[in-house]
Image 1 (cartoon, rainbow, N blue to C red):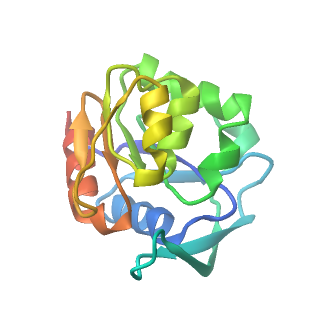
Image 2: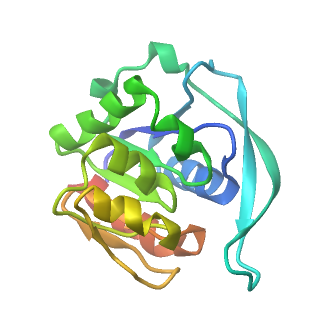
Length: 189
């Protein structure tokens, strides 16, 4: 697999594991990953949150780490990247309101470049209007958004992932092995 240049769009209260694990895993196999957040520069940080599944009706949320961004949002161009990663957490909820972020997400679909989204990352995909007639897994609470965007919500086990064309999605961080393995296949094409 040749070295790819990958964009990660994230923000405050991104899910800790869904940000840190793919960021480090992708770099560990030789890819370049630029993590960006609107209105922030390289060296700035975003707060992360740890979502856990402890038997309640939904996940619990605990403070995570400060995740350091390594690129400046205002300086990047989606056209310069080979693939996109969208972590979950609460960040997609407000990132989907940013027109530049939406345009970037659309670029990756218009250009048929690999995209990996996990958990609440589907909120950003739905807002960008890229889910029509696509299979998409996400955290179960995002099912209505996937379906309102005319996507097919895939209710799969929390440790599994699904690929549809250039898009690989998963319900939450326990799917990292399956999600990343499927993303690696897309990156190798």
